[in-house]
Each structure stands twice: as structure tokens, then as C-alpha cells.
Image 1 (cartoon, chains in turn orange, blue, cyan, purple):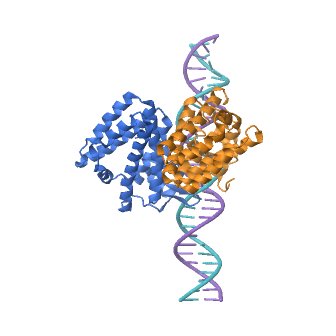
Image 2 (cartoon, each protein chain N blue to C red):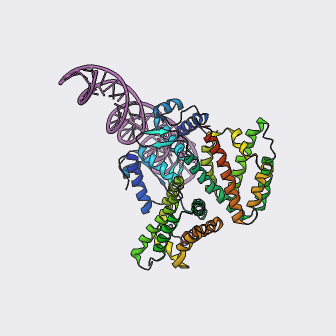
Image 3 (cartoon, each protein chain N blue to C red):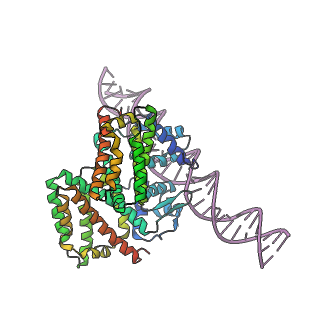
Length: 220
Length: 220
DNA sequence: AAGTTATACTTGACATAACAGATAGTCGTG
DNA sequence: CACGACTATCTGTTATGTCAAGTATAACTT
């Protein structure tokens, strides 16, 4: 956990916690005073925290009216995944044109670890989720563009909102054993078109999983 | 100009104004009280405005120390252009796969307007800048992904920071008369690889112009 | 004269409280 | 019973004042 030196940070962490726990109802407006009491700080710190959370797509703010946790819709999911896809494809493109062999080897190894995890063991699922996050962040780091990393982290918070990993991974069983290794190979194929197309597919595949969850009414 | 109903908005507009005018020195820390006096509001409204400006990459904030207009560096320019490139390439990709003929025709017309403006007339330069902005925003709109538009607008504010259009456009004289029309043609070529590559080139070309300005010491 | 301490002043951060707008409930009147 | 005005009480917004921390300057000591 970060420093809780500043009061805004304290408010941020507290609100983030209850959001991720899912205790707050979606769609209903949240009272700033209530949140201040909950976080044991003042309203103004809460407001700063809310600004940040809005920026991270975890809440939406309607001026003069308040903030709320957005109700998910298909279009919202698709839109945010679109941003994610844009950034990740750019990562793939940059890695491809840079052709950093060290990064290629490291990534291949991480990909191998991911592909070989036995998902039938429930304990492994969380581990898989962590590895997968590490995988994508490592790619972003390897581009050398720090802003890309920042933006991707900002989005990754949102996707934590529905982290029931069982559903997420189930869908991907199709071509399981080489799914991530193939991606790495395509990225480092020295052909930007192939690299980008592989990443497009990768992200879109993930989105399909989340959309299925949505259709099944996973988000109350 | 937006509603100046809220006080934060007022502060935001006032601070944005002085930033874009370039009257504030880069690198030096700005006093919140001074800004509050300048915007004729209270400190807290200024603080909210600063948070937003930080998200828009116009200022950077160092906790417990204050905010300042960042000194530009080559890496900062390249990093932010990287984000821009990611989003714009995604726009191109989506337009290509959607293949909306109406959008194609509209865009071709705007591109034609841009390509045919006589840049030797100084009055036209601002017009050109506006058209170019419209061009890119129209593309983003046509994707149907609203978030893409939001993110691009957020970034476009930053690039306004060095809007001395003479320099910007000068560089692009090379293959002038069909530069934007070619881009539109490539995007709607039905080949995602070509669409993306054309947009990569387009943005990178713009970046090269700004980097040249930077090397010439354009940003004091 | 040099170094150290004290003090006044600046800054950002924050809490409290006052303000404005909207809503819901209630009381009173037709 | 119905309907309109008033009030109590929510809400977000914002101004004022306070606090702590850092900085420069003055003052004192050796």
C-alpha cells in the first residue's frame, strides 16, 4: 500500500476499497458526506479522490448532481476495451519495430508460464491473473514509453471491477496451450502488421469473455 | 466557451488561458494563492482546476511541493505523441473495418479542403489548424467509440501548448497536395494493415515537426 | 567574520462552515 | 378531497480560516 501521508490518498484508498468490494450499489448516487465519514476525512479530500477515480473510469460524475458507480453497458465495456486495445496494439507495434531480443526472451518465458498453468486448480487462478497482469505491464515497460504504462495502469483498475477470474479464463480454453506464446512470437516476427493484428485479436478475445459475463448478468 | 456556472470551471478557463498564452514560465512552481487571485476565485476551486489540468498533461504536480508547467523534453514529446499515435491508429483501424461509406466521403472532402489551402497566406494558417483538428475529431467520432474521442480531446489540449502554426505546417510541404487525401484513401482501403501504417506515418510525421521545433529551441 | 539559531513569511494541505439548488414532505386553504 | 406554498433537509459547491512544513532572512553567539 502507498503512503497514507496525504488525506486525499487516504480517502482514495478507502473509496477504492469499497468500490472493488462491490458493497456500493451501481447506478445510485453516492453522498460525498457519507464517503467522507466512511473514509474518516473531510469532504474536500473526498472530492479530490473522486476526481481521480473518475479519471480512472471507476465512477462517473454528473456536475451539480453527484457521482455514482456507472451501470455497465455493452457499449461502455466495448468503448473502454477500445482504449485498451489502442494502447496495447501500440505496445505491440513498438516492441515489434524495436525488436529488443532481451525483452522477447523474457516475455516468451512469462508467456510460457501463463500457458502452462493448470486452471482446473482453483488456487492457480489468482496466480494466473497476476501473471497475466505482469505480462502486459512488462510489455508496456519494454517499449520505453512511460506514458503508455501510466495510461494502461489507469485502465487496469477499471477491469479489476469484475475480477471473478473463473469466468474470464474459461472462455480462453480454445487454443490454450500456446495462446500467449503465439502472441509473443507474432509480436517479434518483425512484421508490424502481424504484430498488431495478433494483439487486436488478443484483446478482442478478452473483451468477448467480459461481454459474455455481462450478458449472463454477472454485474448485478 | 463553456458555461462559467461553476467556480472551478472559471478557474480552469483562467489558468488554461494564461498557460496557452505562454505568459507563465515553464519549470517554475506556481503559487495556488497567486492563481486564485488571478482567476478571482478561491484556492479550492483552483486546486480542482489544477487536478484537471494535470490529467490533461498541461501541468505536473509534485505532492507537498506544488504544480508547474513541465519543461518539455524530447522524451516527453515522444511519449505523449506515442499515446496520440496509439489512439489515432486505433481510429484508423476501426474506420477501416467498419467501412462507413458516408464517413469516407465526408472525410475525403475535409481532407481535400485541407490539402488545398494556400499556406503562404498567413491568414489561412489558423483556418488550416482548425480544419485539421476538425478532421481528426471527425474521424474519432465516426468510429462510434465515444471514449476514444474523449481521450483524444484530452491530449489535443496539450498539443495546443506550442501552437505556432507556421512551424508546424512548414515541415509538411514535402508531399503536400495529397497528404491528407492519401491518408483517407489508405484508411478506407479495406486493408487494416495499410490503414494503420498510413496513420502511424501521419502522426510520426507530425511529431517530427514538433521535435524539430524543440531542437531549434522553440520552447524557451 | 563565520556559523548557528531563532523568527517571520511563504507554501500546500486540509477541515469547518456557509451557500445554493433541488426534493420531499407537510401544512393550510380552496 | 385536491392543490399550492412553505419549510425542513437532503445534495454538491465554494469561501474562509487553520495547520504544518519548508525557506529565507535576521539576530545572536563564538
